[in-house]
Image (cartoon, rainbow, N blue to C red; front, side, top):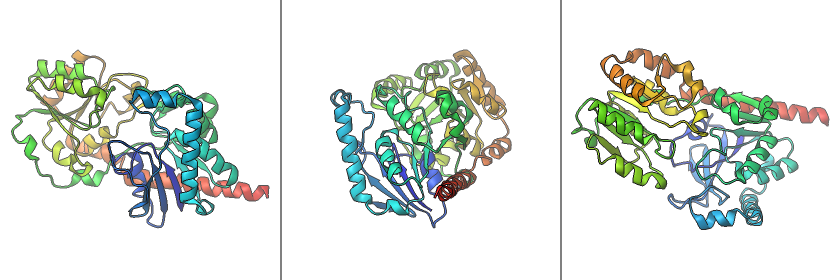
Length: 383
């Protein structure tokens, strides 16, 4: 199957849902992965091959932190020009190949105008919107994002979300298009033998660990309180957004809190091997109230019990496998409880295995294959 994916992140940024799913598609698949431009990461304007995936950078509208750029993007004519240039860039690069494309998938709403033109010229190609986050809820998300979001929902033949809670930010008239395919974990990776990293060898146990991105959704105060009240050592690992650099610096003034920069996805099991307990300390806001964190399944696959805040009330269905707490006192109390009486490792691994990316990828592939087949059959009937 020939696939186009318009992405909001780079292929080699973090190993997220899309990379995990696409990398497990059959080798006979041909996937063009169009990624956005970045100031922090290398941009590649000719394709790079990752097995059956070809990743290419094409500049497109995106949410940025710069005041000047955001001011320019607030003018519709500037966005129109950028959209036109991105569409032209795509057409030049991909000229003649769209006719052989079986399906278009987007997780980047800002490609809506190009996708509309592609759909008008190629009505037999189904459009899938992989809605893995609420694009209107990110910090600094401009007002015009709503237009692109609604346009993407309108264009999509199918909207794929990872969990029931995501449907809450999708307008009711689009919900009939929704299919749910969960997030997951590379289960086999977390079963391999591990080597304790040097950076953790001097940190005394018990160690409470968080691995993942750190931004506005991270509850710095609850970590500060927990470190002060438990006497345990906390290790936080992952990329920090520019807006939160000062917060992480203030947090690590406490000698019981250690921050380590991003690590390769393949290294996560090595770090988790040193953890006595894992946490997901998110504040509840418009973004997190509909989030299904991959790390919940990764912690479980590693046999590590997890305590998390009640940022998404719909996650109560997992309460037999993670501790969900409603306030800072209960968060601290449950950390103490799970350090003394952790959930059985075998129970957690069995839970994590149910969300293996191999099964999820196969489910995803079958869904889009069916969408392509149904769309072609419908078109044949019309003819």
